[in-house]
Length: 218
Image (cartoon, rainbow, N blue to C red; front, side, top):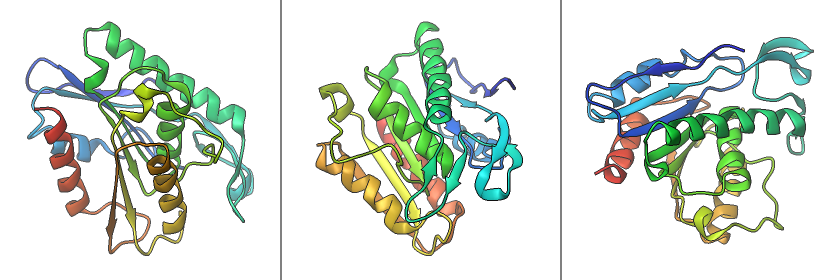
């Protein structure tokens, strides 16, 4: 298993963002984003994990970095739930390691793009049982959410920033909106932000994320 990429801040770390890449990408995908955000978040460590390389059914069984196998695209994603759980356990271990190193869990954030975002939503709201600083859900969806889910009081207090492209043809805008609506219905303080883009990341989006993180790390 490839070790996460860890980007230490200019000052002693007192906060951490664990940021997951999307399907087929790697731990270096969001390195420029982490470095840009650290210019204002001077005491925030960034941890960029690497997904395991595995066969992905919807891509003809081709092996690539993937947090879980996607077996079918419609009407909704059919996924390998065991692999999702395994990826979530890896993120839980990273959270616990940061907590044990002295960082307050209320200053630990989870972020993820596309498939990585699905993992962090699952981890934060269906597996982690303590406080978190917040969740950044970029161009993503929540295949494990359901109308029957019930969040604890600590989970309800985790703020979420959902960012999505209006023209996203990979993870349709409506899929992201459904995850957002699930969270709102559960009493989570969730914010929805759309951009005139497809399945990508824009500079303005990163600037907005920097403001959102900065507001919570004062």
